[in-house]
Image (cartoon, rainbow, N blue to C red; front, side):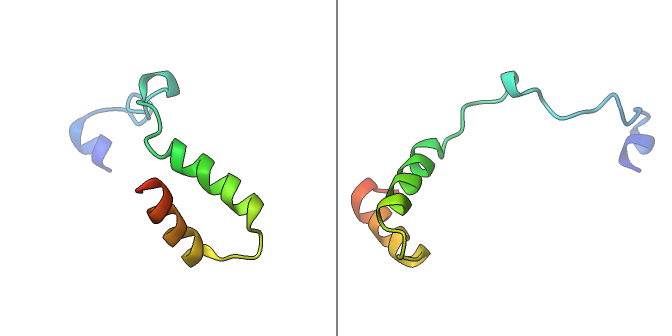
Amino acid sequence: MACRLVGLSRSAYRRPLRGDTVADPDRALREWLRAWAKDHPRYGYRRAYHDARAEGGW
């Protein structure tokens, strides 16, 4: 509807390519969390949150 209002075809407006986007700002946190979860499989997300805040400053 918005494309029709502006006069663009829907195929003319698309999401940016992966090469044009900036790097993922949460990549380091995600890697840390995967490693942490592998070491502590029985802990939940609350414990992971507190350990991440204490250890990494996230």
